[in-house]
Image 1 (cartoon, helix red, strand yellow):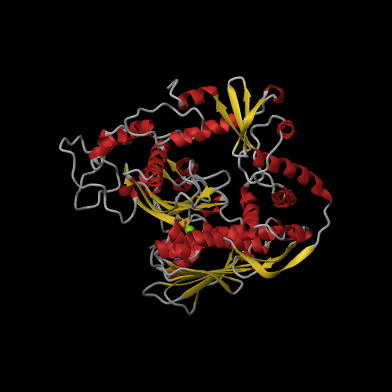
Image 2 (tube, rainbow, N blue to C red):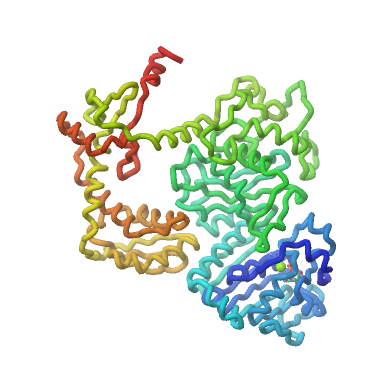
Length: 627
Ligand code: ADP
Ligand code: MG
């Protein structure tokens, strides 16, 4: 295909900007070019996190001899001709900017050979083009980028450490492997093989990135709702991750981070996952190209949908059906038999395309306006507000889904959002839980564990062990400031396997971990070895401890490792301090409560509630005095 310079008026319509600012963005652009060239095998090598050396080799279509120099020109592309083409972009690149801007700030060389031609090479150093010369090479293209930013020292200074840059490249390679399971990738950093995939399907790609065991914890989706196709894998109800780096979304084959889709997933999982836990997903969303605008940011990491509510609603309803186990889930799970083939006799206007031998062409037969109306009924709002809108008890979507089982359409639907609402409500309540201690009267104790207090129309049940634990913990934590550190070598070192961004993050914490009494080092791949721990922390669960460190990598405030450590020390110590089934005297009971200072929202060090609030009206409901 010919490479031509885009006419000014076309180029002006493209959001332009800096595409190359870090080694990983160079790798990204080069791999995208290889994918656009329809390669079936792509290998990537880096040295020093890509700062000194990046090479991307593919077996794709190659570049003709006379096009080699055009490839280096700004705004030159073979992928776009007119402004109209912008609305149906199917290739990853289209701006014709990447090669030119990389070549301007590095020492770049392209060796390429098309199916019929010979191999030629052309180098460009800091933007100065060399001569096209015959070379040796197989079909495809090999692009080498050395000494990135050698001529722009200011930008060089902004790069992170080699390890961090390498981590970002690795992370992106993982996403390429997942996004293109039909392509065999290999990624080598400093001569060590980091990832290898075989191009034989998504489950194999997942295993390449996350290890073979992962598949046991996932559901495979394959759904088509309102013309929105969603397939891929999501973690089951009990499978969660400590941060968002295990979430990958590909819209029409492109990796994006998108608020709409992420909100839909977060809300679908809301009742299953606890605070600071995040769902695992690798999802592919395919929508008609004309309703998605990929031309939002120069680095193309987000997309804009013509209608967010449609996307949100479709993703939410597919994922929540599967998690909640509702009968429609069968339609959305890969490999499961569709719920029923028989259609209701009275067939309403078929809004979903009825069975035809040919797969329907992407566009939904329901208009977006119609679908939107339906979804307004069915789906909780995108922002997690406590006052969820009232919804009709009849599931409006069941009415026109011709494949929906009749039984389900007849019986009034249970409110699948009940749990979510409950959770939001509880969260609200937790805010105002401090009660005046003097108003509380002790009413007795059950099972040597639960203490009952009354105050007007409110009752509080306090778990004495949880409360006790919390108080001891607070005291210990305060005392810990002046501990002496003794490092204790472990008989069997503890090895922690992480993903690339987690690894890069933890490596940054090594120094402070060592100051605290740990001995830690890199252990090949993305693994970290712990070979000594502070002696007063011999008993803690190391995988939980490091899990917590890693989970804080995304929180807004920087992690205070020392604080986390104090938490751990205190909870380890207080476990030993609290005895079970102890009988408390009435004085002790009062003292306990006074020390809690009436805070009924307290949690024990392990996160369990210390007190539960019960209203008189709730008691009356239990006994059916009121409904
Ligand atoms: P864009 O990808 O936006 O078109 P680039 O600057 O990344 O712009 O690439 C310019 C052109 O060089 C592409 O349009 C393509 O024709 C050619 N090209 C770049 N990399 C490759 C490759 N690996 N295989 C084949 N052609 C390539
Ligand atoms: Mg490109």
